[in-house]
Image (cartoon, rainbow, N blue to C red):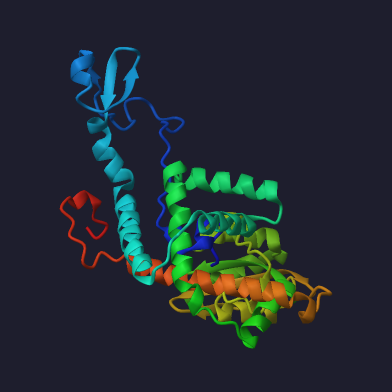
Length: 325
């Protein structure tokens, strides 16, 4: 299913960002069951401490140095950091060969595009960006690197993008055409999907019952929301064709039969049908062209970033950094 809004909306490089781990002990965890901390070193004379990078002093007596944290930091995000560095190294070479400089203007444009993607409301966009940066562990250094990385990726692919009438028609449908609000459940087998559909329809069924079952049984990331999707347009390529067909062929309030997609099965409940708005293609053409260009740039950026992130040709000496282990 379509991922929730994230920094991946401006390029695959964002998807290389790792998540943040909490540094607190979960509620209800006793000290005896909490993960053992790396022992802090006893306080040393200032002259000796200066020889090693000092991170913190605990209770004014015990020091924690970088060396004490290194293994945990590598385990937490070492592979992500290495992959980002690999991408940036190869990207810099590609940009140099193409004679392209990623200047301040390009980087600032990336941030504007990101904020526009998150929300039409400027204040809300800034708030959402802050939440995403916290969730993905994007502090000042990694966030700046991310913007520069995406600016470089876009600079390399932007000339490859073409705009055609079919693409414009699809984008117009996505932005201004009819939409449907649906809940879905994704199941591993036909039997599971049939049982889900039967259970969801039992005793009058309804969206509430479908949502409860989706939370308990669905394999999709939308399960946490009771299977609820954002409004879906008929031509939205973010969703599989079979799923879109089921959403638009099922009556409002009804549950679809299981739909096969690859190795999994969908069950759909259509909650609402929303009509097209009153905006015509002539009025919307400029915006449709811009959104189509950004969408196609993003796909090309994703593909390029995956290519640059390959471990092929990379010799890793410390296996703790190797994501292929």
